[in-house]
Image (cartoon, rainbow, N blue to C red):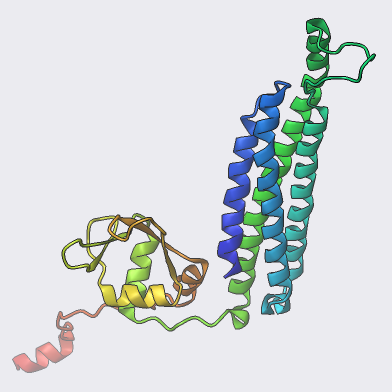
Length: 270
């Protein structure tokens, strides 16, 4: 589902915002080296956001009441991310670098001149970095808002829910346990069998676990080795399955005998 992509986008925007916030507005070549990867990252995130917007715009989600505000919110994320990229680009332009001037021009390598240039540029750099961090924060919030809006709209209009597998009681119980957090899967070096452990140390049977994984209701963390414990989380589709297929509670039955009416008891004693 697009919701999972949007949540990951929100997390990536948030991480980039934190990274930009740690930059110090100290003019010079070192700042330029730090800005270069940040600008590349924000442009990569812009591309991913546009792709998500295109996918949503061409999906059945547009038929769901309330889908327009979600699409508009994601469009605003593209705008905010582009503004963040412009802020970082402004920092590059305002960052004074050292070089050789044309012959006959006034010397710019004098220490006093250099300090004056740096002092003049520092406030502008600090403002540009702060503005970029603010815009990236808005992007993170916008992605998460859109993801939450999609889930809300689908819950309020279940007729538009994507096709979800009908879970058995064992599969639902396994999914519910994984949703609690702390579930991991690992493979034995001897038998190559996978073991799924819940947070409380109990084992989740492989059959329902495999069904959940095949239907993309859960996500297994990618790792460099299958023999290293990998985290298991519930996807947005899995959350919807949990919310829409919650089994009804069966009424408890009592084995105690019903009390005998007083009149009937008196009749038996006669």
